[in-house]
Each structure stands twice: as C-alpha cells, then as structure tokens.
Image (tube, rainbow, N blue to C red; front, side, top):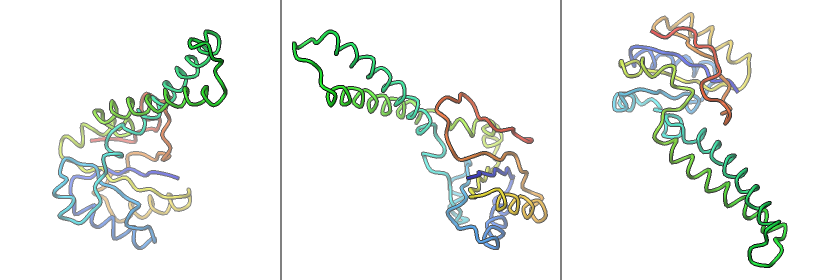
Length: 184
C-alpha cells in the first residue's frame, strides 16, 4: 500500500482533491488531513488524522514490544538456570514471562510515543506549524498511486506532492525513510 502526501495552504484545495479522489473510486476513508486547524478540517467535513496517525504511538509501541520481549526472553533464560523458587521453569512459564515483558514494553513504548510526533510526519512539522495542511492518501497499488498523482498534478496546482511512502511502520527506523520532494 502506498501513502501519497500533499501539502497545501488552503482547505478548499483539499475539498477539490477529495472530489477528484471520488472520481477515481477512492473511498472517503482513504485520506487524512494533518493540520493545526482541526476545527476547520471538520467544518469542511474532511477526515482529520487520528491520534494513532499523528503521534508515534504505534511506532514506539512496536519498539517497546521488541525491547520488552527481548528483555523478557533474557530474563526467562536466566530463570531457567537460576530456578529461584526451586521449581524448574516450564515452556509455558517461559513464554508467559517473555510475553509479559513484551506487553509491558509495548505499553511503555506507546505511552512514550503519544508524546511525540509520528516519525513519518516529522519532515512536514514546520510546514504544518506554519498553518499548511498535509493530506495523506492511501492507495493499494502502484497503478492507482500513479493515477492519483497524475490527476492531482493536472487539476490541483495548489497541492504540492511531497512524498510517496509505504504504509508499514518500521520499528527499527529512527526517521522517515522516504525522500521528501520539497516542503515550503
């Protein structure tokens, strides 16, 4: 799946882009608007980005789960050798220990992530803070992505194409892994 990203100065441009998306049979749930003007986005009856999309909750949660699971496995291996209660650790207890640490890591990572911007949106934060709108459009395949880019380029000069990303989060990434075209 591709996520196409466009920056624009006006919500009227986003309204027009949504109409164009409908012509391509791209559903209303395929796009999100990231901006400081959440009320304006709602007044225009556009979809604003959710907490999951705006914050680093998912990315940091994945990182925390990996770290917690790794620590849990190491702890469980240590318990296999030490047997602190005099009882050998069974396989189910081994898995439960690793899972418990993994879940705790995911929760902790998610709580940290809620306080940070989504790592894929960081390249656009300055433009968003200046009052611009970032529209993300999710499309399934390369052909549809190319059709969207072509139509947006032809009809919507007020929207600047800034990135094409996949929709998968990479827990090992420390920054966005796509090439930002140009941000004004």
